[in-house]
Length: 142
Image 1 (tube, one colour):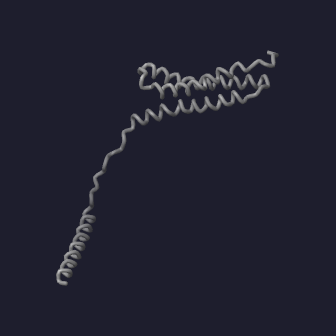
Image 2: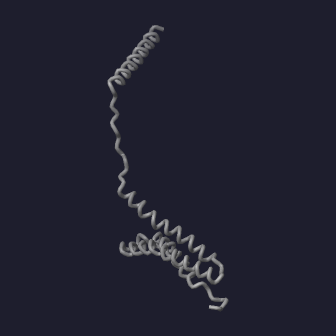
Image 3: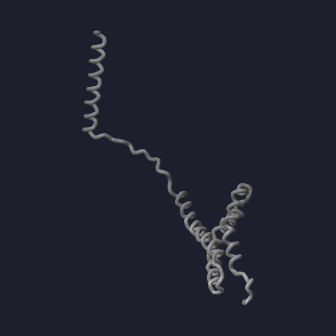
């Protein structure tokens, strides 16, 4: 442990666990249509689980770096990436579940008029008809 070149033992597992979901996402985008459903489900499950492992490894790596008085930047970057992936893993399934179960609201409510509105509309139509008839009579007499 007194060796100066000794590296943080948690940095590499944290980095690998943080990058696995990104690699799986690329693999699913490239070959998603050519894979069977079981393989896709396995990769999605792995993509949802590994951020939690990366979070644990990055916290353990940060603690180990603090004890050895080494730099924290590598584990801090892994911590930020894994935290974003954990938020993604927690939020996306609930969003997708809501999108599947919530039907679109395409209902059109019928518009019913009250008797006052119908009378008002009739009087407006009568005024318009009377005006049109009087204009056609005056134009014909010219």
